Amino acid sequence: MRGDAHGGCGRRLGETHRRKRRQGAPGRPHLVPTRDHTVAEQSKNYRYSTNHQVIIDADTRLVVAVGRPLPGNRNDCKAWELSGAKDAVGRTTVIADGGYRGTGLVIPHRRGKGQAELPAWKEEHNASHRKVRARVEHAFARMKTWKILRDCRLKGDGVHHAMLGIARLHNLTLAG
Image (cartoon, rainbow, N blue to C red; front, side, top):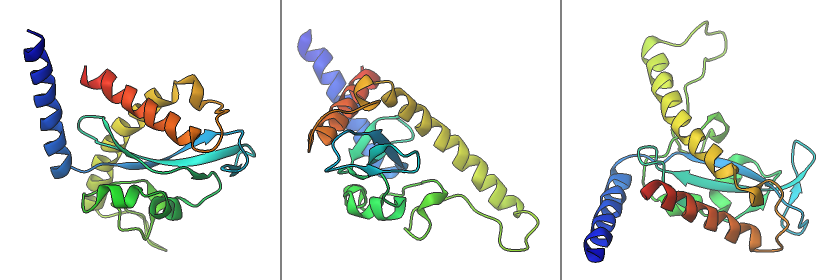
């Protein structure tokens, strides 16, 4: 009986792995307040923090990859490349917010200079983009409930290991 339950779980995880490659995986920066000033920098909110690029599958809400932590004042476009998240997703279609212009990621359409409103097809595209982003944001909200991410006191790679551990626990919670 135990083997059947384990086999079923493996089959389900294998199915989500295949689905992840066909679908897109949204990317998002995740600022974590960090007390270790060797890995953190002051960000917009004047707190020392690290920027973590987290990739979440929009369909399954599972964490696909977590990039290396970078200083919190790092631009999202640069963090995407430097953290290793870009290499982790390969050629998968990734959607992101407007902070990732020029990276090749799918971002919402913006009005051009002097343009009153977007064409209807761009508005529809933005609407579907918002729905997918909302699913991903809810997954981030669940990850942020972990107390260790509210004020991380770990040194060096401890911040990265904490984020990886929370990502695994998040995936276990969802996969059952």
